[in-house]
Image (cartoon, rainbow, N blue to C red):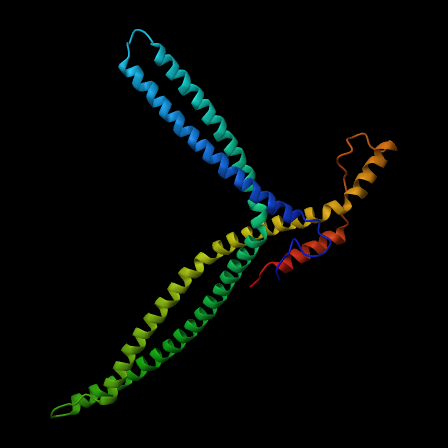
Length: 281
């Protein structure tokens, strides 16, 4: 089930405004960063020129060109630093806005990743169970073969001792010995596969925990978007209750905050819905 923070249920356009603001701030950031980079290049050039004049000048006195070059370099550096601080401020603002804009898409990405991990775990567990069953069958067969080979070997030994002429090894014993070696090789191969499955499965719990944590974080971000979409609809009621309480003398604190107690059944319903939205094995 996909979450849609900007569905048609009486939204206020919060998410769309954030997207538009993100585009605007990105443009401002690109322009500010370009200006900061240009200013830094200019400051570096002026600093280099001032240094070159200093190297060529008199060590005991500062000439007028040197003084002007140093002053210009200092002013250029201050200007470049100011522009870079502006760009850095815009970078922080853009990252905050982008995080909101990307939240719904990231939520679905994390959902898909978590589902893939859970399916992979189930697939590996099923394959491991199958391999273990095959190993058990092979081990049973190995036991039977070892028992039959022991009996056939004893019989062949007695025949060899009683035979006065040339002795021919029984064909049945040869076949049993070959089958035993094949069975043991098969068991080793199956055991190696089980070990490989165990190694891969050992990495999954941590990956699943990380994926669940990422999903829950994005789930919270989308829930905040949904809240901001609905808040303007109830601001009038909240403001009226807060101001009325202040006028009546029920409150001595500021009017800009009001405490609301959420009924237990609403919390439990929200908790159940959030859990239902999370992929499970």
